[in-house]
Image 1 (cartoon, one colour):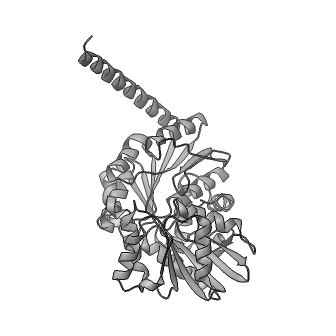
Image 2 (cartoon, one colour; image 1 turned 90 degrees about the vertical axis):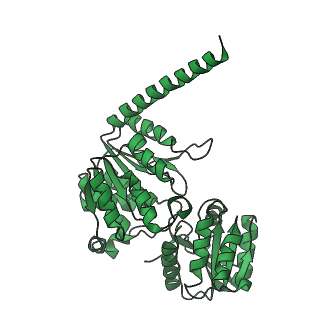
Image 3 (tube, rainbow, N blue to C red; image 1 turned 60 degrees about the vertical axis):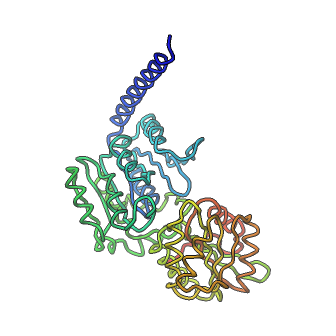
Length: 402
């Protein structure tokens, strides 16, 4: 048998196996009556968790999967398990998630979109999830190297997960016309959560959360739960009990040899607009802290994010020191200095261990400081969060007030 014939036979077998796998996947999708595909720039993981928790509390058998700080599979009883990724993150893992949800006889699967490349976002919806319901939290200027160059391009990319013939829920305000066009194109129905609906989520509704949850995320999740048959108060009580994403916005306090350090975890806010909001919220809540330290976790594979943040931070107000960690820190530094930042305020800690970074932060902090983590939760960001949390000596993890 010639080599060419063997190659053709192998190719034929692979094609047949692919067709069989595709048919099996379609069958599993059909076993899950409701599939909620969650996308957006900020808040995807939180909204995924909120919807799933609200539905669970309403007696709906629900599985969920997040792709946030740490990818998690959440089962109908609320237990969570890490997603095994032997070769790194890949959208094909959504096949395993659907298989698991079908095995657990889920009535609803709430699944966060894990794709960034616009063609892959469309593939995830039309081939892997085939949502009955879509959710778009918002569209902000992030991943511009892939979805850009502008925020409008980001919005155009994100609406690729609009379900064909389904229902699209969104809390997006700026680019709602783009969402409407996508909904019309795919023959879907639009459920737009407006700012007036944000205001219906009261401080009393938000107080029971153990971390800062944004009113718009709660309002959006409540609208989805209501559409799926769970009353507002029942859904809300379920959300209060849900475990937060590891990257959620919290603060810890440390007493260290007479020094008082307050660390705010804002690493998961990847775009400058959301980060600035956290920056000012933290300063407002902890005005007694004498020094302000920005802890910037850079990633060499996210150059646009570092550049955007570097250009933006110089306009936010007084900061005593910028400590740069992670990789590709020069990108942030170059952008910030070009916008007028004093180079003497920058302390470089690229490739240092977490203990060494802590020592540098202590040096930069004086007797009292507010340290705000920014830019990226991945890699060193998560290590820093754990380091501070494990050493909190006062009130433990605290909610950052809105």
